Every structure is written in structure tokens, then in C-alpha cells.
Length: 91
Image 1: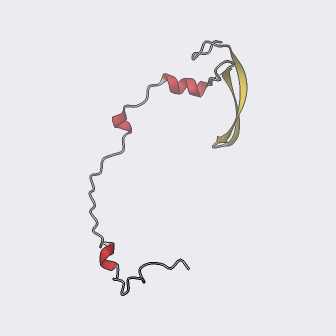
Image 2 (image 1 turned 30 degrees about the horizontal axis):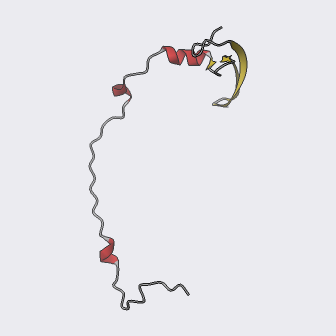
Image 3 (image 1 turned 90 degrees about the vertical axis):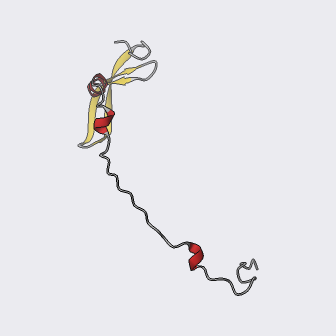
């Protein structure tokens, strides 16, 4: 079998999927010895079916506009009674 990416030699290899929902899952796939491309039946199926149009996959639009007014921090700050009190001491 020839690699569809680089036309290199492909060999069949066994893989272990550790992140499968059912636990560990062994599967066979073709791997290119030159570029490392991996092909299995699921990858070929996904590549053969075109993706759905973006309009069908988009989230529904909910036009909710929220304006929240918060008091500014200047209103909550108390003026310093002394000029030196506002500056922290380094000693």
C-alpha cells in the first residue's frame, strides 16, 4: 500500500487507544514508514464524508444584551488624611 500523503511505503501496525470510552482498545491501522501518516477505517470514513455546513453547526443566536452598572472604585475610596499615610513604608 502507498501513502496518500507522500507515496511512501505503508505497513500495518497495531495500536492501543488509552483514551477510549470503554477503556483500553486495540486496533490495527496502516502507518507510513516515511512521513508517519496513520490510516484506519474510522479516519478514512471521516475523510470521505464532507463536514456539515457551518450554518447547521453554529450555536443558536440568542440576542441578549446585558448592561450592568457598577459603582466606580473612586466613590468607595476614602481620602487619606495624611500625605504619608497613602505611601506604604519600606522599613
